[in-house]
Image (tube, rainbow, N blue to C red; front, side, top):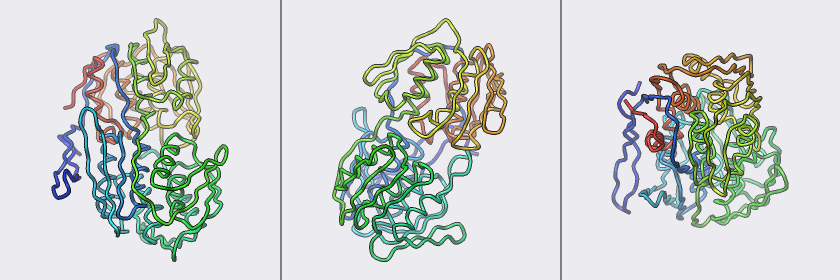
Amino acid sequence: MLTKKIDLPVQFYTTKHERSEVTIDNKNVMKINGGIPLSGTVKTQGAKNAALPVMAVCLLLRGETLTLDNVPDLYDIHTMIETLESLGVEAEIRRDSKVSQVIFRTPDELKYEVSEALARKMRASSLVLGPLLANCGRVSLPLPGGCSIGSRPIDLHLKGLKQMGADIDIQNGVVHASVKGRLRGRRIYLDFPSVGATENLMMAASLAQGETIIENVAREPEIDNLAAVLRCVGVTVETEGAGGVRIIGIDKAHSGHERVIPDRIEACTYILAGVMTNGHIKVEDLVPSHIDAILAKLEEAGAKFSVKKSTVEIFPSKKRLHPINVKTMPYPGFPTDSQPQMAAALSVARGVSTIEESVFQARFLYAQELNRMGADIQISRDVAIIRGVDGLQGASVKATDLRAGAALIIAGLAAKGETRVDDMIHVWRGYEAIDQKLRGLGAKVELV
């Protein structure tokens, strides 16, 4: 177990001929002295779940450059950059108080084999499958890893690629995909609106011969961001009504420049932290329409807030939250990635709430950790029954996955006494400088 720091063996190009090793010095335990209402302003980072697929777009290029703004500084981002570099891409990072940018330079010839070590670091490694196959005609990808929140197979990815003419063979946990000539445009219907499958097939279709129409696609804002990046490198991407995408493949993609959208899940985490601590905070640089489902549930629960063009302001309330019922759904429904944080907030509501999880079957691992802090959460299959308590007590708890870690942190901010959140390595996968941002809001947090 990591106890002092996470050393990421990632190297960025600082100039054309100079390389500098980057190490993120993050500790693996967060100590929180809770019970302090948060106050102040926090800015939303670039979206992790948008940045990872749009970074993979560089694999569609040959001898061209992809520039992305607003890329967050996260463990998963470093892992994806390391993966792209292992395939031959050069990456240059430019980050200061005003600029957060990564420039990808793709060679004329890419490697097509992904290392097992990199693939197992995160599930998003599967996003190289579609663009590599489309550009190189073949790819070898070990089945990816990621958070322990349940099975997330890539069968929909493979089924769609087969329809486009790919030969798929899985041996010893490695996907070997190849195609003779180019992939062929097809009408593809997804059995489930999988975000990853939608992204992979959109990128694969970008270099396919002819027209591809993908139906029952995911509708998350991250899909729109990917479409914008594909357009900026020359691909024709059109929406086909609700739940459909039409793509006309091109022979060669050109250089492009686009921006990563704000992280709606991070924004909601800080919003819920403000609500849970009865604080007064502003969360800036977000897109309120991306979080309509969460704001609607907070309004139903009686939280006090206002919404402006790119800001949500949370106000203190003299009353505890009302109990509510939540069911996670694909976008625009309530996001599964905000479910643990909402459970933490409802653990101190007045009455009994329920959360039904319809996306990931192992998403409730955080419940026993919140119960260690005095919460009363019982799990019945895919439903969490949350009986609100008067308050939480600090305790030593463990982050079982990325969003569970976020839930435990905001619970610790509201709890009396000291909370120690272990296994913060999960949190660094999705939250940029969360300790610094919380201190900026008046929280007493320390990495130890």
